[in-house]
Picture 1 (cartoon, rainbow, N blue to C red):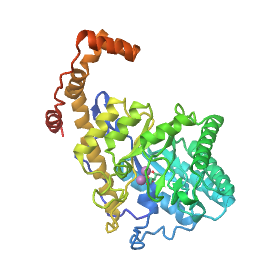
Picture 2 (tube, protein in one colour; picture 1 turned 30 degrees about the horizontal axis):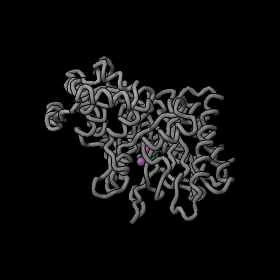
Picture 3 (spheres, helix red, strand yellow; picture 1 turned 60 degrees about the vertical axis):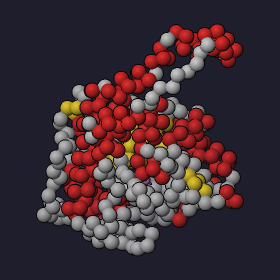
Length: 424
Ligand code: XLS
Ligand code: NI
Ligand code: NI
Protein backbone atom coordinates (compact mmCIF):
# COMPACT_ATOMS: atom_id res chain seq x y z
CA UNK A 1 0.00 0.00 0.00
CA UNK A 2 1.30 3.45 -0.84
CA UNK A 3 0.58 6.81 0.76
CA UNK A 4 -0.94 8.14 -2.45
CA UNK A 5 1.24 11.25 -2.32
CA UNK A 6 2.99 10.35 -5.55
CA UNK A 7 -0.14 9.06 -7.35
CA UNK A 8 0.03 10.06 -11.00
CA UNK A 9 3.63 11.17 -10.69
CA UNK A 10 6.20 9.88 -13.17
CA UNK A 11 9.35 8.21 -11.89
CA UNK A 12 12.61 9.97 -12.68
CA UNK A 13 13.88 9.65 -16.23
CA UNK A 14 17.45 10.44 -17.05
CA UNK A 15 19.29 11.59 -20.15
CA UNK A 16 22.81 11.32 -18.72
CA UNK A 17 22.67 9.47 -15.41
CA UNK A 18 22.92 5.73 -15.85
CA UNK A 19 23.83 4.02 -12.57
CA UNK A 20 25.40 1.00 -14.28
CA UNK A 21 27.46 2.84 -16.89
CA UNK A 22 31.14 2.39 -16.17
CA UNK A 23 33.21 5.57 -15.98
CA UNK A 24 36.96 5.24 -15.33
CA UNK A 25 36.46 1.64 -14.27
CA UNK A 26 33.65 2.29 -11.78
CA UNK A 27 29.84 2.34 -11.99
CA UNK A 28 28.42 5.84 -12.16
CA UNK A 29 26.24 5.18 -9.12
CA UNK A 30 29.35 4.24 -7.13
CA UNK A 31 31.18 7.40 -8.21
CA UNK A 32 28.38 9.84 -7.51
CA UNK A 33 26.66 8.23 -4.50
CA UNK A 34 23.63 10.52 -4.65
CA UNK A 35 21.73 11.31 -1.48
CA UNK A 36 18.35 12.93 -0.88
CA UNK A 37 18.23 15.42 2.01
CA UNK A 38 15.21 14.73 4.20
CA UNK A 39 14.99 18.30 5.50
CA UNK A 40 14.53 20.25 2.29
CA UNK A 41 12.32 17.72 0.56
CA UNK A 42 10.07 16.71 3.45
CA UNK A 43 10.53 18.98 6.47
CA UNK A 44 10.85 22.48 4.97
CA UNK A 45 7.40 23.96 4.39
CA UNK A 46 8.29 26.69 1.90
CA UNK A 47 8.96 29.64 4.21
CA UNK A 48 11.29 32.43 3.19
CA UNK A 49 12.33 35.52 5.20
CA UNK A 50 9.23 37.38 3.97
CA UNK A 51 6.57 34.71 3.84
CA UNK A 52 5.27 31.56 5.46
CA UNK A 53 4.37 28.09 4.40
CA UNK A 54 3.57 27.45 0.74
CA UNK A 55 3.69 23.64 0.69
CA UNK A 56 0.66 21.85 2.08
CA UNK A 57 1.53 18.19 2.66
CA UNK A 58 -0.48 15.39 4.25
CA UNK A 59 2.20 15.03 6.98
CA UNK A 60 1.69 18.62 8.19
CA UNK A 61 1.68 19.85 10.90
CA UNK A 62 4.90 18.05 11.80
CA UNK A 63 4.20 17.74 15.51
CA UNK A 64 2.99 14.18 15.73
CA UNK A 65 4.63 10.74 15.51
CA UNK A 66 1.88 9.31 13.30
CA UNK A 67 2.53 11.99 10.73
CA UNK A 68 6.31 11.58 11.15
CA UNK A 69 5.83 7.96 10.06
CA UNK A 70 3.70 9.01 7.12
CA UNK A 71 6.50 11.42 6.14
CA UNK A 72 8.93 8.49 6.27
CA UNK A 73 6.63 6.40 4.07
CA UNK A 74 6.48 9.20 1.50
CA UNK A 75 10.26 9.67 1.67
CA UNK A 76 10.93 6.02 0.87
CA UNK A 77 8.43 6.12 -1.99
CA UNK A 78 10.39 9.03 -3.42
CA UNK A 79 13.73 7.27 -2.97
CA UNK A 80 12.34 4.44 -5.06
CA UNK A 81 10.98 6.74 -7.80
CA UNK A 82 14.47 8.28 -8.00
CA UNK A 83 16.40 5.02 -7.56
CA UNK A 84 18.35 6.98 -4.92
CA UNK A 85 21.19 5.05 -3.29
CA UNK A 86 21.36 7.25 -0.15
CA UNK A 87 19.51 9.70 2.07
CA UNK A 88 20.49 12.02 4.95
CA UNK A 89 18.61 13.41 7.95
CA UNK A 90 18.73 15.72 10.95
CA UNK A 91 16.98 14.47 14.09
CA UNK A 92 14.53 17.38 13.83
CA UNK A 93 13.51 16.36 10.28
CA UNK A 94 12.42 12.88 11.19
CA UNK A 95 10.82 13.30 14.64
CA UNK A 96 8.74 16.11 16.14
CA UNK A 97 10.48 18.44 18.61
CA UNK A 98 9.35 17.48 22.13
CA UNK A 99 10.88 20.31 24.13
CA UNK A 100 12.97 18.09 26.44
CA UNK A 101 15.81 15.65 25.88
CA UNK A 102 14.20 12.48 27.25
CA UNK A 103 11.20 12.73 24.94
CA UNK A 104 13.37 13.75 21.98
CA UNK A 105 15.44 10.65 22.62
CA UNK A 106 12.43 8.36 22.76
CA UNK A 107 10.87 9.68 19.58
CA UNK A 108 14.24 9.63 17.79
CA UNK A 109 14.72 5.99 18.72
CA UNK A 110 11.19 5.11 17.67
CA UNK A 111 11.41 6.83 14.29
CA UNK A 112 14.87 5.51 13.50
CA UNK A 113 13.65 1.98 14.28
CA UNK A 114 10.87 2.69 11.81
CA UNK A 115 13.37 3.96 9.20
CA UNK A 116 15.46 0.86 9.84
CA UNK A 117 12.49 -1.40 9.03
CA UNK A 118 11.88 0.51 5.82
CA UNK A 119 15.56 0.24 4.87
CA UNK A 120 15.35 -3.55 5.08
CA UNK A 121 13.21 -3.63 1.93
CA UNK A 122 14.75 -0.62 0.22
CA UNK A 123 18.02 -0.16 -1.63
CA UNK A 124 18.45 3.31 -0.11
CA UNK A 125 21.14 3.53 2.56
CA UNK A 126 22.01 6.25 5.03
CA UNK A 127 24.83 8.50 3.80
CA UNK A 128 24.83 10.56 6.99
CA UNK A 129 22.91 11.57 10.04
CA UNK A 130 23.27 14.85 11.91
CA UNK A 131 21.76 16.86 14.74
CA UNK A 132 19.82 20.04 14.08
CA UNK A 133 21.35 22.34 16.69
CA UNK A 134 20.24 25.60 15.12
CA UNK A 135 16.42 25.74 14.72
CA UNK A 136 15.03 25.47 18.24
CA UNK A 137 15.36 28.63 20.36
CA UNK A 138 17.55 26.76 22.88
CA UNK A 139 20.37 26.94 20.31
CA UNK A 140 20.11 30.66 19.57
CA UNK A 141 23.52 31.43 21.17
CA UNK A 142 25.22 28.30 19.88
CA UNK A 143 25.40 24.62 20.77
CA UNK A 144 28.91 23.54 21.85
CA UNK A 145 29.97 27.22 21.84
CA UNK A 146 27.05 28.43 23.96
CA UNK A 147 28.02 30.55 26.99
CA UNK A 148 25.54 28.44 29.01
CA UNK A 149 27.03 25.04 30.01
CA UNK A 150 23.52 23.56 30.16
CA UNK A 151 23.24 24.07 26.41
CA UNK A 152 26.65 22.41 25.92
CA UNK A 153 25.29 19.46 27.92
CA UNK A 154 22.06 19.31 25.89
CA UNK A 155 24.16 19.45 22.70
CA UNK A 156 26.42 16.62 23.87
CA UNK A 157 23.44 14.41 24.72
CA UNK A 158 21.76 15.29 21.41
CA UNK A 159 24.84 14.47 19.32
CA UNK A 160 25.33 11.20 21.19
CA UNK A 161 21.73 10.21 20.44
CA UNK A 162 22.14 11.09 16.76
CA UNK A 163 25.46 9.22 16.49
CA UNK A 164 23.82 6.17 18.09
CA UNK A 165 20.92 6.37 15.62
CA UNK A 166 23.27 6.86 12.64
CA UNK A 167 25.33 3.86 13.77
CA UNK A 168 22.20 1.74 14.25
CA UNK A 169 21.10 2.51 10.67
CA UNK A 170 24.52 1.72 9.18
CA UNK A 171 25.21 5.35 8.30
CA UNK A 172 28.46 5.91 6.42
CA UNK A 173 29.22 9.34 7.86
CA UNK A 174 28.22 11.60 10.73
CA UNK A 175 28.10 15.34 9.97
CA UNK A 176 28.38 18.41 12.19
CA UNK A 177 27.35 21.72 10.70
CA UNK A 178 27.50 24.58 13.20
CA UNK A 179 25.09 27.22 11.99
CA UNK A 180 25.00 28.82 15.43
CA UNK A 181 28.63 28.04 16.31
CA UNK A 182 29.77 31.60 15.76
CA UNK A 183 28.61 35.01 16.87
CA UNK A 184 26.27 37.89 16.22
CA UNK A 185 28.61 40.43 17.85
CA UNK A 186 32.11 40.25 19.30
CA UNK A 187 30.89 42.63 22.01
CA UNK A 188 29.40 39.67 23.91
CA UNK A 189 31.66 36.85 22.65
CA UNK A 190 34.79 35.23 24.09
CA UNK A 191 36.01 33.72 20.84
CA UNK A 192 39.00 31.88 22.29
CA UNK A 193 36.90 30.13 24.93
CA UNK A 194 34.18 29.24 22.42
CA UNK A 195 36.73 27.73 20.01
CA UNK A 196 38.27 25.67 22.83
CA UNK A 197 34.83 24.34 23.73
CA UNK A 198 34.08 23.52 20.11
CA UNK A 199 37.43 21.71 19.79
CA UNK A 200 36.83 19.70 22.96
CA UNK A 201 33.29 18.87 21.87
CA UNK A 202 34.53 17.55 18.53
CA UNK A 203 37.20 15.50 20.31
CA UNK A 204 34.44 13.94 22.43
CA UNK A 205 32.56 13.07 19.25
CA UNK A 206 35.66 11.32 17.89
CA UNK A 207 36.24 9.51 21.21
CA UNK A 208 32.63 8.34 21.19
CA UNK A 209 32.88 7.17 17.58
CA UNK A 210 35.75 4.87 18.55
CA UNK A 211 34.00 3.76 21.73
CA UNK A 212 30.93 2.48 19.87
CA UNK A 213 32.90 1.16 16.89
CA UNK A 214 31.32 3.48 14.36
CA UNK A 215 33.31 3.02 11.17
CA UNK A 216 31.88 5.98 9.29
CA UNK A 217 33.65 9.29 8.80
CA UNK A 218 33.16 12.26 11.09
CA UNK A 219 32.68 15.36 8.94
CA UNK A 220 32.40 19.06 9.67
CA UNK A 221 30.68 21.30 7.14
CA UNK A 222 32.24 24.71 6.49
CA UNK A 223 30.03 27.77 6.01
CA UNK A 224 31.14 31.37 6.55
CA UNK A 225 27.90 32.92 7.79
CA UNK A 226 24.10 32.50 7.76
CA UNK A 227 22.36 32.11 10.10
CA UNK A 228 25.11 33.63 12.33
CA UNK A 229 26.93 36.81 11.31
CA UNK A 230 30.15 34.82 11.52
CA UNK A 231 30.60 31.05 11.78
CA UNK A 232 33.81 29.51 13.12
CA UNK A 233 33.86 26.79 10.42
CA UNK A 234 34.27 29.58 7.86
CA UNK A 235 35.70 27.63 4.92
CA UNK A 236 37.82 24.57 4.18
CA UNK A 237 41.12 26.29 5.02
CA UNK A 238 39.77 27.61 8.33
CA UNK A 239 38.43 24.16 9.25
CA UNK A 240 41.75 22.54 8.38
CA UNK A 241 43.55 24.94 10.71
CA UNK A 242 40.97 24.33 13.44
CA UNK A 243 41.29 20.54 13.14
CA UNK A 244 45.09 20.75 13.35
CA UNK A 245 44.95 23.07 16.36
CA UNK A 246 42.89 20.51 18.28
CA UNK A 247 44.79 17.45 16.99
CA UNK A 248 41.85 16.15 14.94
CA UNK A 249 43.40 16.31 11.46
CA UNK A 250 43.52 12.54 11.08
CA UNK A 251 40.07 11.95 12.54
CA UNK A 252 37.76 14.47 10.92
CA UNK A 253 37.17 15.37 7.29
CA UNK A 254 35.07 17.98 5.53
CA UNK A 255 31.60 17.94 4.03
CA UNK A 256 31.85 20.73 1.46
CA UNK A 257 28.85 22.55 0.04
CA UNK A 258 28.85 24.48 -3.20
CA UNK A 259 26.59 27.25 -1.92
CA UNK A 260 28.75 27.72 1.16
CA UNK A 261 31.86 28.02 -1.02
CA UNK A 262 30.18 30.85 -2.89
CA UNK A 263 29.18 32.59 0.37
CA UNK A 264 32.83 32.40 1.44
CA UNK A 265 33.94 34.07 -1.78
CA UNK A 266 35.38 30.89 -3.29
CA UNK A 267 34.56 28.63 -6.20
CA UNK A 268 33.48 25.12 -5.24
CA UNK A 269 36.53 23.60 -6.91
CA UNK A 270 38.69 25.84 -4.74
CA UNK A 271 37.16 24.31 -1.61
CA UNK A 272 37.53 20.79 -3.01
CA UNK A 273 41.16 21.47 -3.96
CA UNK A 274 41.91 22.84 -0.47
CA UNK A 275 40.34 19.81 1.22
CA UNK A 276 42.11 17.42 -1.15
CA UNK A 277 45.49 19.06 -0.53
CA UNK A 278 44.89 18.62 3.23
CA UNK A 279 43.73 14.99 2.84
CA UNK A 280 40.38 16.09 4.26
CA UNK A 281 37.95 15.59 1.37
CA UNK A 282 34.98 13.80 2.93
CA UNK A 283 31.72 14.38 1.10
CA UNK A 284 29.86 17.07 -0.84
CA UNK A 285 26.55 18.92 -0.67
CA UNK A 286 25.99 19.68 -4.34
CA UNK A 287 23.61 22.62 -4.19
CA UNK A 288 24.28 25.99 -5.70
CA UNK A 289 23.39 29.50 -4.69
CA UNK A 290 21.77 32.19 -6.75
CA UNK A 291 24.68 34.44 -7.65
CA UNK A 292 22.61 37.61 -7.22
CA UNK A 293 20.75 37.10 -3.96
CA UNK A 294 23.72 36.59 -1.63
CA UNK A 295 21.78 33.94 0.31
CA UNK A 296 22.26 30.22 0.75
CA UNK A 297 19.43 29.51 -1.69
CA UNK A 298 20.09 25.74 -1.83
CA UNK A 299 19.15 25.23 -5.47
CA UNK A 300 19.64 22.01 -7.36
CA UNK A 301 22.77 22.11 -9.54
CA UNK A 302 22.20 23.08 -13.16
CA UNK A 303 25.54 24.38 -14.40
CA UNK A 304 27.46 21.60 -16.13
CA UNK A 305 30.80 23.43 -16.59
CA UNK A 306 30.91 24.28 -12.86
CA UNK A 307 29.98 20.78 -11.80
CA UNK A 308 32.48 19.23 -14.23
CA UNK A 309 35.40 21.08 -12.65
CA UNK A 310 34.26 19.98 -9.18
CA UNK A 311 34.21 16.32 -10.17
CA UNK A 312 37.53 16.79 -11.97
CA UNK A 313 39.12 17.73 -8.64
CA UNK A 314 37.24 14.96 -6.83
CA UNK A 315 38.43 12.34 -9.33
CA UNK A 316 41.98 13.67 -9.09
CA UNK A 317 41.76 13.29 -5.31
CA UNK A 318 40.72 9.64 -5.67
CA UNK A 319 36.93 10.00 -5.54
CA UNK A 320 34.36 10.44 -2.81
CA UNK A 321 35.21 7.31 -0.79
CA UNK A 322 32.64 6.88 1.97
CA UNK A 323 31.22 10.30 1.14
CA UNK A 324 28.68 11.09 -1.53
CA UNK A 325 26.86 13.73 -3.52
CA UNK A 326 24.11 14.99 -1.25
CA UNK A 327 21.47 17.33 -2.64
CA UNK A 328 21.16 19.74 0.25
CA UNK A 329 18.76 21.44 -2.13
CA UNK A 330 15.20 22.57 -2.03
CA UNK A 331 12.48 23.31 -4.52
CA UNK A 332 11.61 26.92 -5.24
CA UNK A 333 8.68 27.78 -2.98
CA UNK A 334 6.30 28.01 -5.95
CA UNK A 335 7.07 24.42 -7.00
CA UNK A 336 4.17 22.89 -5.13
CA UNK A 337 3.67 19.54 -6.80
CA UNK A 338 4.94 16.07 -5.94
CA UNK A 339 6.20 15.89 -9.52
CA UNK A 340 8.42 18.92 -8.84
CA UNK A 341 10.29 16.92 -6.19
CA UNK A 342 11.06 14.18 -8.70
CA UNK A 343 11.99 16.53 -11.53
CA UNK A 344 14.30 18.60 -9.32
CA UNK A 345 16.27 15.58 -8.13
CA UNK A 346 16.35 13.91 -11.54
CA UNK A 347 17.65 17.13 -13.09
CA UNK A 348 20.34 17.49 -10.45
CA UNK A 349 21.41 13.88 -10.92
CA UNK A 350 21.61 14.37 -14.67
CA UNK A 351 23.69 17.54 -14.37
CA UNK A 352 26.10 15.77 -12.03
CA UNK A 353 26.30 12.78 -14.35
CA UNK A 354 27.18 15.04 -17.29
CA UNK A 355 29.74 16.80 -15.14
CA UNK A 356 31.26 13.50 -14.03
CA UNK A 357 31.52 12.23 -17.60
CA UNK A 358 33.18 15.47 -18.73
CA UNK A 359 35.59 15.29 -15.80
CA UNK A 360 36.42 11.67 -16.56
CA UNK A 361 37.05 12.54 -20.20
CA UNK A 362 39.48 15.29 -19.14
CA UNK A 363 41.27 12.86 -16.83
CA UNK A 364 41.52 10.26 -19.60
CA UNK A 365 42.71 12.78 -22.15
CA UNK A 366 45.26 14.10 -19.67
CA UNK A 367 45.55 17.57 -21.21
CA UNK A 368 45.26 19.48 -17.94
CA UNK A 369 47.64 17.15 -16.15
CA UNK A 370 50.21 17.46 -18.97
CA UNK A 371 49.99 21.24 -18.83
CA UNK A 372 50.50 21.11 -15.08
CA UNK A 373 53.54 18.82 -15.40
CA UNK A 374 55.08 21.14 -17.95
CA UNK A 375 54.45 24.23 -15.83
CA UNK A 376 56.25 22.72 -12.85
CA UNK A 377 58.86 20.78 -14.84
CA UNK A 378 61.67 23.03 -13.61
CA UNK A 379 61.26 21.51 -10.15
CA UNK A 380 62.41 18.13 -11.50
CA UNK A 381 66.01 19.32 -11.84
CA UNK A 382 68.48 18.32 -9.07
CA UNK A 383 69.40 21.99 -8.45
CA UNK A 384 65.77 22.94 -7.86
CA UNK A 385 65.11 19.98 -5.55
CA UNK A 386 68.29 20.71 -3.59
CA UNK A 387 67.07 24.24 -2.92
CA UNK A 388 64.27 22.93 -0.71
CA UNK A 389 66.84 21.26 1.53
CA UNK A 390 69.17 24.25 1.43
CA UNK A 391 69.08 27.68 3.02
CA UNK A 392 68.88 31.29 1.95
CA UNK A 393 72.69 31.74 1.95
CA UNK A 394 73.37 28.74 -0.28
CA UNK A 395 70.61 29.77 -2.67
CA UNK A 396 71.98 33.31 -2.84
CA UNK A 397 75.46 32.01 -3.66
CA UNK A 398 74.01 29.97 -6.53
CA UNK A 399 72.00 32.92 -7.84
CA UNK A 400 75.22 34.96 -7.92
CA UNK A 401 77.45 32.21 -9.31
CA UNK A 402 75.09 31.19 -12.09
CA UNK A 403 73.68 34.66 -12.71
CA UNK A 404 70.15 33.26 -12.34
CA UNK A 405 67.68 35.66 -13.97
CA UNK A 406 64.11 34.32 -14.22
CA UNK A 407 62.43 34.48 -17.62
CA UNK A 408 58.63 34.95 -17.21
CA UNK A 409 56.50 32.39 -19.05
CA UNK A 410 52.85 32.47 -20.08
CA UNK A 411 50.37 30.81 -17.70
CA UNK A 412 48.32 29.81 -20.79
CA UNK A 413 45.04 30.37 -18.95
CA UNK A 414 42.94 31.07 -22.06
CA UNK A 415 44.28 27.99 -23.83
CA UNK A 416 43.38 25.87 -20.80
CA UNK A 417 39.90 27.37 -20.64
CA UNK A 418 39.48 26.57 -24.33
CA UNK A 419 40.62 23.05 -23.60
CA UNK A 420 38.00 22.58 -20.86
CA UNK A 421 35.35 23.93 -23.21
CA UNK A 422 35.94 20.97 -25.53
CA UNK A 423 34.62 18.63 -22.80
CA UNK A 424 31.77 20.52 -21.19
C1 XLS B 1 23.00 24.63 6.01
C2 XLS B 1 23.71 23.37 5.94
C3 XLS B 1 22.95 22.18 6.51
C4 XLS B 1 23.89 21.02 6.69
C5 XLS B 1 23.38 19.98 7.62
O1 XLS B 1 23.31 25.60 5.33
O2 XLS B 1 24.06 23.14 4.61
O3 XLS B 1 21.88 21.86 5.71
O4 XLS B 1 24.20 20.42 5.48
O5 XLS B 1 23.12 20.48 8.88
NI1 NI C 1 23.80 24.93 3.31
NI1 NI D 1 24.78 21.37 3.74
